[in-house]
Each structure stands twice: as C-alpha cells, then as structure tokens.
Length: 293
Image 1 (tube, rainbow, N blue to C red):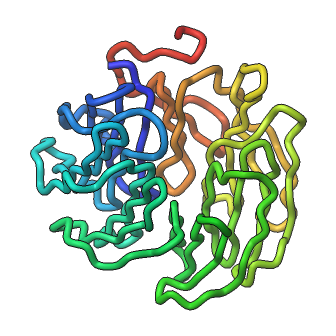
Image 2 (cartoon, rainbow, N blue to C red):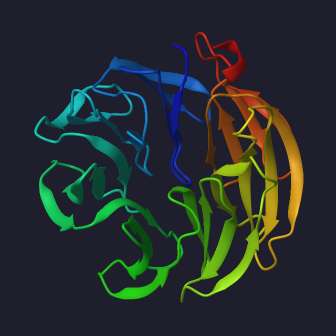
C-alpha cells in the first residue's frame, strides 16, 4: 500500500495510514506492528482519516461517494456508519475521544457521539476544529477564525493572513497556527499575538505540534512552490526563534505523535523531533516519496 495519508493522535498508541483511496491500515506505534488492514470509504484530499486518543477507534470519510465509517482500530471491523453524510472534508476525534467532529463543504460541522454515530450538536459556519489538551479552548475554522471555549463561549476572533489554515496546535496557554502561503503565528488564549515566523517565499509549514518535553512547538516546512526537501523545524514557545532540526527528504505525508516528540513519515521512518535523528521504521508496503510519483 502506497501511503498518502496518516492519522495520529497527540499521545495515543495507534496510527492509521491510508492509500490514495479505500485501503486503510492501523499500526501499534510502540511495537511498530500492523494491527489491521481494511477497505473503507476513504478518498484522497482534506482530512478524512482519524484515530482517537485511546487507539480504539478509526474514522474514515469519503467526499466523492460520501459516507462516514467508524471502525475498530484493532481489527478493522465496522462499529457504525453514517451513509447519509456527504462531501466530507474533515473528521477528527475530540481530546476525550467521546465525540467525532465532521466538517463538510457548504454544510455545518456536525458533532457526533463517537460510540454510536448519533448527532449531538451542530456547529454552524464551521469547517474544521482544533481542540486543546491543556485548556478548554478550541479553534474554529470557518468564514472567520474564532477562539472559543468548549462550552461555546467566544474568546476572541483571529484575523486571517491567507485563505486557508494548514494546521493548528495548542500548547499551555498558547495556540500556534500555520496558514497556506503565510506565516506561523503564536497567540495566547486571549487571542493576542505572541510571535510570528515568516518562511521564505514559496515555503510554508504543513504540520505543527507542541512538545512538552522541550516546551516548544515543532513544524514541518515544505518549499511548495517548486517542491523539494521537507525540513523539521523547532520554534521556542515564547519567542518563535526557528531552529532546523532535520532534513526529512521528500515524504508524501507526515504526522506527529508521542506528544510531539516523534514524527512518522509516509516512507515509514520515525524521527525523534528533539534530537533530529531517525529512531525506527514501520514497514509500509510500497512506501514512496513524492519524487516517485
């Protein structure tokens, strides 16, 4: 399986990998063993693959054919389905694993019971949601960017610098946001900017994570305009000073795990984000880099 999609959780023990479409595999990140391989409604684009923090559930969604499926991460067996959901662009489990958030084109974000698939709430005007593991804050991405509390209380609007958010992650009392073709910005939980990092023209930061072990943010930067080597960078939480940690080559996809201290690539390599060294590998069938396609 050529890995084009990867889903991890902040501290969870399981990763899910997806092909361009349909085929999904789940992995034990401790033993690096494959747990299950199964067919799903997954198709390429957006963020349509997710695993929960406990490593118990894997969610897959489709845009073209539609549908949402929640499966056992251990076996791949189907727990529940929602064939009525269409044009899904984003799925993600809440930090406590009890809810599944589902964003779609031109439709409100639905909050589902992760155990049953039953609808719990509707977030109107919202496409994507990022939750904090450290406070009750959430970032809602819609027509506007809004920092809110989980109970729905609005905290602060956040001005956009480009048309789309690539990734966002929370640290204690801080939120880090990367935008397409734009900067990486860090704001406090009141929405006030603390620092920003501006990549060189033609580059942006695709993925972000917070690592408590170093008390800093880490990100993967890519020269999107011309293609090329992805770079692992580290940013101090308070000042944002960038430091190059490692050159990762040209994997098609990457994802942080182990509270930001590890990075998994679509080639199966596991990187230590603190020391910038490769510390292991998951054996993916047909793993490729972007130069191979």
